[in-house]
Image 1 (tube, rainbow, N blue to C red):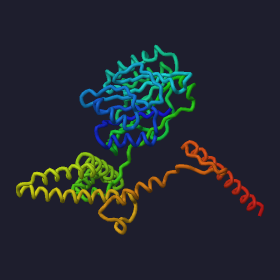
Image 2 (cartoon, one colour; image 1 turned 180 degrees about the horizontal axis):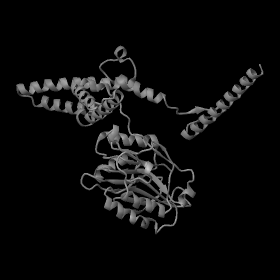
Image 3 (cartoon, rainbow, N blue to C red; image 1 turned 135 degrees about the vertical axis):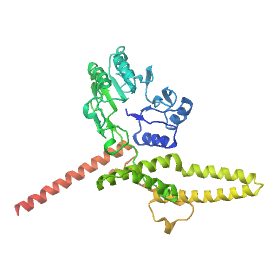
Image 4 (cartoon, helix red, strand yellow; image 1 turned 120 degrees about the vertical axis):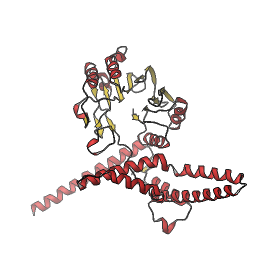
Length: 399
């Protein structure tokens, strides 16, 4: 079973939805835990169905904060046990069928008083169940001193969590990937990083899944978009961000300037520049309205401006697909971006192995079978390679 836990910090933006779709596509989770969704349930449900999660438990946000969800696929047999704004617990019967275990998704409280009350009563969650127990999600606190870098050290708020974990005999899952799962994003000397997301389990659960582990996924990397250069405001954003990175040391100045430029362009792209396709659609709709009701000189002028805007947006869309297609578009393209769209899609498809033909003529299509066969071929190649290397080495040594 694959469990994906993500503090999405709001699922209202299209970019967050695309990130969620990409995460589900790449990792194929059976159970999905979302924290800080910041949207109401009627908005959340269509987005869960879009990624094939039809079963869910949801605690809606309070005002502009919160929103806690646990969702699962149809083939997973879960039975809800308890639900609150900080903890959602379910019994898992499908994996393995003979030994049900308790899954608790956690979204730890932020305030110190709430943390103390929550962790002092944490043991009550497992009093009615005698079996395997896994707790996974955002704990909003650190278990060990090395789990935090920068800022002042937490003492009283973390001590209650540490005592609860120790008293219940819960052991942390080994972690791969990034060491820290959260950062305040300030960079340089003001940056604070911490490992707030983790999974912990009792001995009964470890007996069921002795090889279990978890991976801390990286945040979406910064990528410069060529279409930004067609907007004069991008130059102002870069100039302002570059000036914020001033430091007497040249290397530090360069590092800080690049950091502030990435943050500045990302923020500007999200809140001001917008998405090209949505802008084209909105501008075309506005143009259609003006063309249907034009009756004065002002409407004619406005229509002319809208046509110019659409032309510029189409250029930006073309440039966007130019960058993704990775070809010399100035020699082979035209104003229509369909060619570059298809080129990108074909290139992505050609980078995937859909099937393999074995030595006996049999074809395999399953991803697991293809992966296992590829590893087998690689192992054979490495064995032959090192055997040949030893023979050559012995011949040279005898000579």
